Length: 139
Image 1 (cartoon, one colour):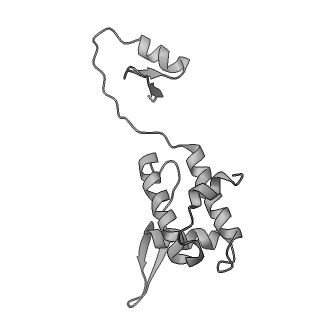
Image 2: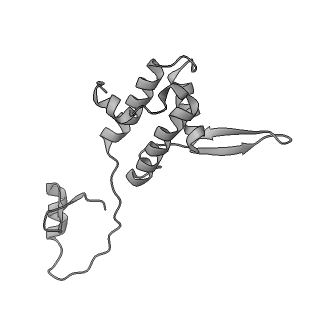
Image 3: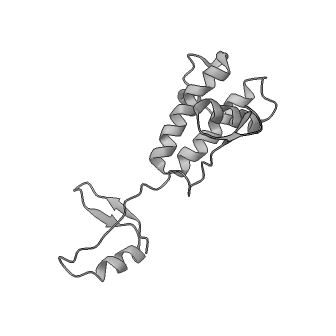
């Protein structure tokens, strides 16, 4: 069973809702349980990535669709599966950045790799603080 916990200022883990509290209340004092800790994805960070793509797409002319830009950014950032074709040919398919496939820690690494990839693909963004530009843009 999954429950969601938050770390308090004192360092303890506390359930964030009534369901979690009910489950914790069934445990006896000193009872040992096993837990797997996984940071939940930050939906704001996910929206921020797509906001970044929208901002870059509107300020470039190389890519004909935002989807093509996303594909190029993911390939340049190295977040792809490599697919061998006939002969020496290969193609790339972006990996999924879905909630089920990528943890928040992995998504943070991906986001930073995407930020670094954009100026390689579109030199007009070299030296531009895209995170700061996003602050001035409604996501």
